[in-house]
Length: 627
Ligand code: BES
Ligand code: ZN
Image 1 (cartoon, rainbow, N blue to C red):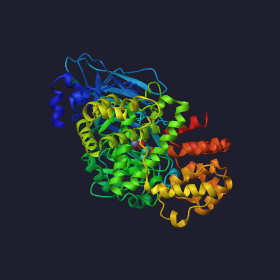
Image 2 (spheres, rainbow, N blue to C red):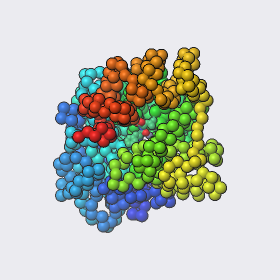
Image 3 (cartoon, rainbow, N blue to C red):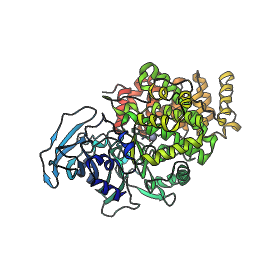
Image 4 (cartoon, rainbow, N blue to C red):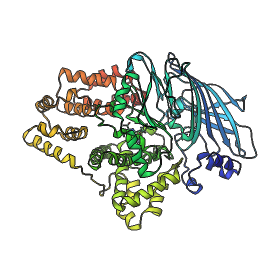
């Protein structure tokens, strides 16, 4: 690839985009997958970055990163400016090929931040140049969460982690912050001893005695996959090429939970081809991490709430691993195409889970996904019907608005329908080709539709699936598959018996239930009286469940049935203060708000908010009318 890159570099400007985007995607496919990104100020068609050398000092006390980003920029003839995205960065100096230049900041947009314009010397040919930006971050930088020792497991050392997706990388690195622009990187990071630094790159497995860490990321990635974590961390191997990092006291539990990671990688590879990124490691973060997981290349970031003790929530690892193909290898061209990342990943996650744990298990995940899909379609059909389209237009909005069950579960069901229509052999062959032909490149919704309709499906199949309606229309097509899970039959029978005659499920039945069966049960309960909820709690002690998914489902049941005990109230409060995972915060606060406990919800939020990451604060501020 390096050789190919340097050959192309010297050919002509016409091939500019080819090498800048990545060497694997073919030129023809490339032209069709370049698209204007309304969430970045960068003008990559004129001047784009290809490599970054990052040097940063991490100051835990001042909550600041300070240093320089040295970008290699490639630009065409008669181009005189390169544009970077920034968000609340303090730019101290900019050097072009070693000499200071007069740079300029444009007007600030409340969503997109501030463009940085750097002048380039005019050139008559395709040229490349070094642009070195000296800068520091704002203490409130959107990507960064600085944790006090109390917010960690060990309670002794502070912790820092980044979350760059979707457009937060610009708050800690001046960059061309669009998913269609890829670059390789290296980094020198200094941290206070005895902390360890990790990135989405080749990582150390031991602490450095002087706090200096060097990283190398030889595969080109978009900026939203830039990641850094700093804390009191240790490493445990899971296999030759996989491992897990966590705070030392928590590490054994994590290593136990994730024993099947190697099997997952092998299952994934057997379906869509070789894992392209070398090692696959996990980093288990403190509980304020705002997501379940984040697919940072080579180093998935994960919430500790999936460490349930019984390996029941590891589908999240399958999901983040699946992104190593769908997302990290073939990347959504813009945030409007986000469903290409997530819908494909939910589909692939399900295939990996089927490979490792069997079809009955994967079917449960599919049925739960279907439930979420139906609920979201119902909710959005009233409030925002256009947001039920896969092909969504987020121009002028925060790309975060697109992070809904539509991209994930509607996307998944569309792909499931294609699979069911044409059969796995043809579908898998298509997808294997899709990943190898578009690897290290981007994909647009339009191009995918073209590939499906010209290279995969017959006219009859296109019509019976209704490809265009699935992609472009609001709502849910009537031919949406309804997955069925054998293991839920017993749960549904138990729900019926409870619904009709208030007969509690027998312990001989429930002792075989996994987390997923319990979720089906809790989500299927309706019209519960306070006393009903009380008898369920007495029988199954949901209030003391150590499983975060079950707890959150239970919080909702309790709120809607007006059931509360001092212990439950305390549990809700301490959970909301400790855990920052948005997927748990939203339904829990919502349930309180909608069931006459708005005041309590706001009081807890006021207490919990300082411990949340900016992306969770953003969503919860809106939900709870926080000012
Ligand atoms: N890439 C996403 C997380 C994300 C999406 C962060 C958009 C910021 C903007 C990640 O892969 C994901 O989907 N996480 C889910 C896990 C899951 C199993 C569906 C989550 O965090 O809940
Ligand atoms: Zn995902």
